[in-house]
Length: 314
Image (tube, rainbow, N blue to C red; front, top):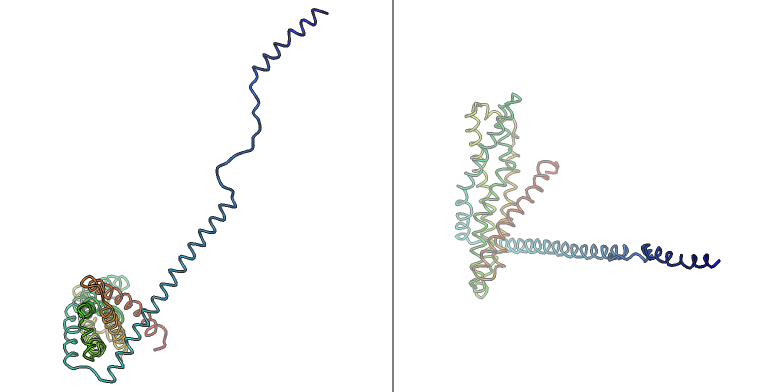
C-alpha cells in the first residue's frame, strides 16, 4: 500500500510536466477591426453625393442665369439700336466707312475660304459618285452644299474673326480711354454713334459677301470636277437639275447671313462696351467676342437649317 501511495504521489510531477509541455489554449477574444461600420460608410457616401449634387446644381443655376442675362443684354442692345435707327437714322459717312471695313475687306478671305471648300467638296464628291456612275450630278451637289451650308457659315465665321474682333477692339479701346464717357458728356448716344452703323453695315454687307463667296465656291468645284473628267456642260446642267428654279435655296442661305450679321455686330459691340482693365481687358474682350460669335453662329445655323430646310415651316 505504501508503495502504491508512493507511486501515486510520484506520478503527480509527471502530470504537471505534461501539463506544462502542452501549449496554452488561446482565449477567445472579441474580433477587432479598424474599418468603420457599414452604416457609417453609407452615410458618408450619401453626404458626399448630396454635396456634389448641390454644387452641380449651383453651377447649373449660375450658368443658366448667366446665359439668360447675356441674351437679355443682347436683346436690349438690339432694341435700343433699332429704336435709334427708326428715330434718327444713321450717319451716312459712318455707314460707308463701316461697310468698307466690315464688308469689302472681308471679301478676299471669304472668297479664298469658300472657293477652296468648294474644290474639296468636288474632290470627294466626284470619287464617291463615280462608284455609282452618276458623277455628272457633282455640280448640283456641290452647289447645294455651298449655298445652303458651307458658304453662309464660313462667311459668318470669317466676319466674326476679322470684323467682329476689330469692332470689339475699337470700341473697347474707346471705353478704356474714356472716349465713350466723353460722348455721353456731349449728349451723343454711343448706341447711335457706334452700334447702329456697325449693325447696319453687317446686315448689308454679309449677304453680299456671301453671294460672291458662293460663286467662288461653285467655280472652285467646277475647276476640280473638270480636272477629274467631268465636263463643264454636265456640271452646269446638274446645277439646273438639282437646285430650285426660283432660287429659294440661295435666298434661304442668304437669310442665314442676315442672322449671322446681327450676331457678329451685337456681340462685338456688347463686348466692346463692357470692356475694362486697360489693354489686357481689350485683348480679353476681343478673344471673348470672337469665341462667342462663332459659337452662336453654329447654334443659330442649326436652328435656321431646321426651320428653313427640314421642318417645312418656311
